[in-house]
Amino acid sequence: MNQKKLTIVVPAYNEEPVIEKTTTVLTNILKKLINENQISANSTLLYVDDGSKDRTWEMIGELHNGNSMITGIKFAHNAGHQNALIAGIETAQDSDYIVTIDADLQDSPEAIIEMVHQANEGKDIVFGVRNNRDSDTWFKKNSAGLFYKIMGFLGVEEIPNHADFRLIDKRVTKAFLQYPEREMYLRGIFPQLGFNQGEVYYARTERQAGESKYPLSKMLSLAIDGITSFSVKPIKMIRNVGLLVALIGLLYLAYSVVGKMMGHNITGWTSIVTSIWLLGGFQLIALGIVGEYIGRIFTEVKHRPRYFIEEKKL
Ligand code: UDP
Ligand code: MG
Image (tube, rainbow, N blue to C red):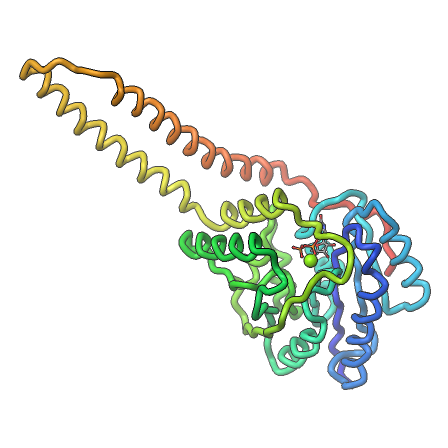
């Protein structure tokens, strides 16, 4: 008998339209793996209801009553996708393997089988990597590509086309739980943990039902979190631009002093107005970027709890 316990962690925010289908598909995967003797019989599905406003939690309760394999915790408020994942991992930290997957089943549940096989052969982390972006909108495809380029340039190690679909074993879970920061960017943290890493490729499909819970604003804030929590390069770039501008200023000073001594009169205000606006703009951008980091320090220093669990069905 295989004694490796697997918990599949599923964050769910207003996922009423998909929850039943998702439960059926994922419990079938669990059953299959148990029958193949790949995982232990007490493996479970763990929903993390991220403060849903619809009937998601009631439905999880009903599913739990009908099948003890299905468990759940419910946040008292909407704490966000990343926090839901962290809470799931914390709750399931005694499992040998934890797989995280979105509730809408856009990531192929079949890939979980391959992840477990790789884990049983000694991998500690198995990343789910999309081999196409056909199901994405033009905008999402291109913005994602640009984002990976920027991240690479800023020196952040990331696995392109990998989101939060992955398997981690207990060693990795223990290492991960030592990260104390409040604002976490999980897909940046896991690759840098090291250990023995593997990848599983799959085609990402359309959402089963319901709408995306990631509007542009949430995508942007995740991207900014990703950059500012892993790289201080933007601040260094500001310093360099500042040095360059100061140097130009000095040259200009020398130029005008010499001009004055040679009796030239300064004509026109174009150059003055241009530099005022240009420099003003640079300064505001610079302040904004520095502010972004100070904002992060502010949130980290407060050390507020990441989430509150209101109810548990374990
Ligand atoms: N999600 C969450 N809290 C939120 C937003 C999303 O827990 O505030 C969950 C959501 O239920 C889903 C996963 O995060 O399981 C990914 O969201 P979604 O599929 O809407 O994002 P997309 O695939 O469109 O990027
Ligand atoms: Mg989705």
